[in-house]
Length: 335
Image (cartoon, rainbow, N blue to C red; front, side, top):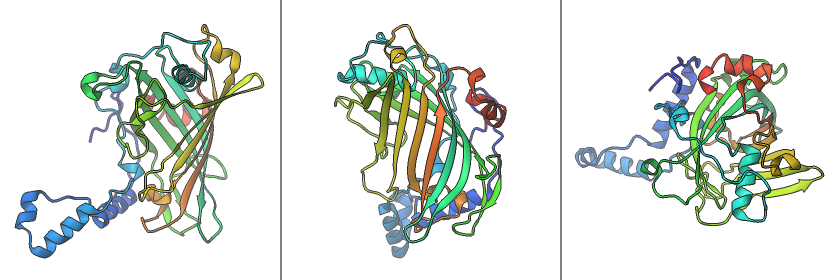
């Protein structure tokens, strides 16, 4: 695996032997290492049956299987996506609703966007009290690009490709300072914490909706179906509710997210205002075993809940000093 980010900086992620051990155990238990047809033909009857049963098992999503960095400088090499309309949106119209969403959450002029966040992570349990597990300093780095038809095929005109980098450093929940080793108070397991970094790609459709390129089980909307987001004028503010309730059955359930964005109504509607420092809040729930360092296995029912607050900005200089120290200095390629 390439250990350098898109800008060529050496990856400084800490090693995590616990993660490798747990992930290896999960892979073995789930039977994800598939045999070739030739191997199956030569296997004994018992081995063949086991392999076939293993192939029928669903591949369980694990957060640390995600790719850490873009390998071909995709974040910088693509053509920035821009919009011809930059204000005076009719949010009841699906296409203009989508433009308002992109202006609130990103921008319409091809600039890079950063969303630094402070996060609290909590454990929820079926039969026992849950509570606070960790804090985190996190950041999205986003770039809207024109999708290459050779890479993504035919798409509706006006589709934007969002290149995304996520970076998170775990914090002691009481001091909100970096921590690498803690005991999980809910299962008694030691946690050797690894910074959580990954990249992902979304196709953002002009009528609303999106497609998660790498993980379609979580977002795969019809590109031609109108799907406006809920936007409400609230005093002199505009508030966007944008969530994903992943309804396909599977072992990743329950899983859902809810994002809220808030910015001055006048700035969103003003065609001459290009970059808005929108306020951001996030709430998400997923299975706790998706973070293997937490000491859970697939059969555990505990859920991990994340609550975050942040602010969208468009320059590394505008990042909070806390994020400059914990993220930008450690991972300069994420800028």
